[in-house]
Amino acid sequence: MSALILAVLLAALDQTIVSTALPRIAQDLNGFDDIAWVSAAYLLASTAATPLWGKLGDMFGRKRLYLVSTTIFLIASVACGLAQNLPELIGARVLQGVGGGGMIVLTFALVGDIVAPGERGRYQGMFGSVYGVASIVGPLLGGVFTDQLSWRWAFLINLPVGAVALVVAARALPSVARRAQARVDYLGSLILASIATGLVLVTSFGERWGWDSPAIIGLTVVTVALAVLLVPVERRAAAPVLPPAMFASRTVVFSSLIGFVANAAMFAVLVYLPTYLQIVHGVSATLSGVHLLPLVVGLVVSQSLAGRWAAHAGLLRPILLVGLLANLAGLILLSTIGAGTGTLVLSVYFLVTGIGVGMVPMVVLTTVQNSVPTADLGAASAMVTFARSIGAAFGVAVFGTLLSNGFADRTRGLPTAGGFDAARPDTIARLPAGSRETALDAFAHATAAGYLWIAPALAVGILLAFFLRPSRRAAEEASAGDGPSAQAPTPRKNVSTTRSAA
Picture 1: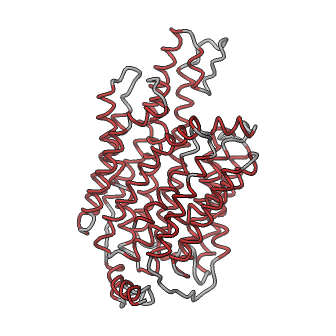
Picture 2: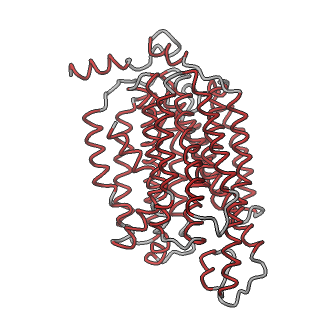
């Protein structure tokens, strides 16, 4: 478990650790115009590769693929740290995303392999806490490395930590032999990866390229067409990367949709609250992390409690409902923030939001894993992880558009002679004192309005949770060896016995 937690920590950190280092990277590598690709390349590659890693783990065994994905991630991290120009860095980030996507989805599926169904929620809660904390700590570490050492250490630090995780995993993880009964669904994997690429590009660059631009419209049309094409391709495949039977399961479909909306809201909070604190309240990147400690505390505590409560099948839906309601309450509270909102009030708002953010993601994953045969754990985990990744990109993109447009509308009459640009809030500092206060108030209100607009997505998640019917039947049948996955890996106690004998 320690090795798996380290892997999730590294993969999650590398989604956010470069955010505060991007200006220095652009300066050193002379690539201001294309610097956004440093973040987008990792997200795009990890999202696109996730379903294939999950299915390959089901077919060939997860341990060996986990070791391969971790190795790819570490090699790519070194390449990132040694990159001499922006194309080299972007290429290395693509490779790093491929490895990171495998590390995350295979970790979640491995928990399903080595932990009994009744205990999965507790262990998944650990990973959820690590994932959430990494989302906040990442930008802070990136800032510290950039200011005190070099931005290259944001990547090179992965090597010693990842090496420990790799060695421990190689020694400690049980090996479960699997032999593929059918060919790998390469066509379905390619189409699904293309769909993921289109979705990430549209959500990440829609604001920059223009939502009504030919590029965005064309990408949207192609992505929709590929989604339609995927259905018959997967129905004909002998071992589909996304088994069509999963789409007939209300638990899998509704849980994936809930994961999508919950992650959209979560990343809108985690990505933009530090920006609000740094611009409106004038704190440093490091101090913004200190201000967000109540959110981290709420997230970690709620993840832990939700994981323990999830051991009871009857509590899965109530936990989801409570978490989604708390998350919705947090967004409504955040929609009231302004330039003069005090630290104590913000701490209470952050705590409520953290509790809501923490209770949902891993309970969703546990609900799905406990409802499918063991032979489909990888594909099911990949489907939820894929939905959550797209949700994160969607939430960040939509909130960024709302924030940008809202701020521009509220600062339309401000003078631009001093170099102020409504598209770049960091230029507020160049304004005269009176105009600066107006701009800060405008940014605070635009942030608050953005959270209010995001809230209806969580309302949809709450509605879906009401119709969710969690079940452990498939997982229990698989563990007993007499269900639809009679060829599933050896049950947990037999795996342990085999490893001890070896």
